Length: 378
Image 1 (cartoon, helix red, strand yellow):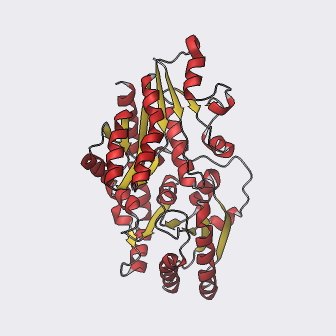
Image 2 (cartoon, helix red, strand yellow; image 1 turned 180 degrees about the horizontal axis):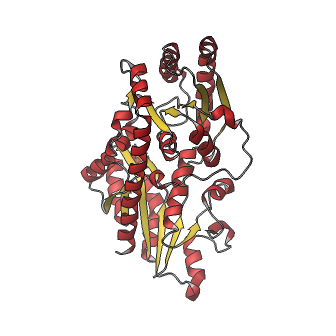
Image 3 (tube, helix red, strand yellow; image 1 turned 60 degrees about the horizontal axis):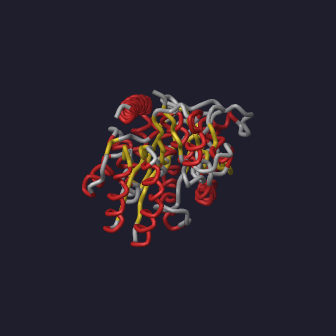
């Protein structure tokens, strides 16, 4: 029995977190069959980052769309089962227009099903939905052979909505295996050793920068420097989402004078880190402080201490996924008291937390593998 997976990459391409989970997903599916990447609307640089030399690119195959590709393969098609795989990530919708539009967009998947193509959506989270979008999502879920949400909060919401073919399928980032950079590194590697890497977003969601929102984190970071939490260490500002650049610029400007007073070296890598560069930076660091989920998970995969410094009401994805995996004790709310003390406690537990991330990664990889086998053996 031979499987073909037609993979649709993420629509969001400015976030290296999406690059991470798309690449990790493809690495998993390659274990079970051949890959065709539907790169019709995806920039070539993104496809190059997630693909390998054996993958077929639909746009370059000169066979048109998905159905044309299958049809033109004709009798030469060696595949017993064909799957169309939607990208991991997060789904949230509100408004009647959005509900109607989602059903229209999903109509192609109903057509695929008529031609015997199975539809998989896994490793993603959902919500919030208003009533009309909850109904539309329930309708659409009928087309999937697997609707695999990555956290228990999403699972509970999906059960309440009445989602069909519901499964628990952890975030693909847990399965990712970091690779060494194959190109000359552009940064001073020595400056990365023993560094505290700081990477923050300046909004709850979306791309709009909010200096007032960021100001809460700037104030707390200044206090941490005043309390000598980072004594003897360097601070490096980075971003792996293009929209976070302005946040990093503002944090750097707000911290540099205080760091100079305390004799702390601070620097700013002013370019978006893709996976290879992020792996190298994170691997060399002492810890990474962030309010972005996949900055934290990628730090853990590189055996570096991730410290989620968040606003709990705004970062439900981080809370849900870390809580599901027994890592809630590492979370610090920006409004907590004694944050400096809490960070020092995490520093003291650094090795045990890194080991815990490693165990969780292995456990979740096993869960995802079993779920894949269940889908393919249906």
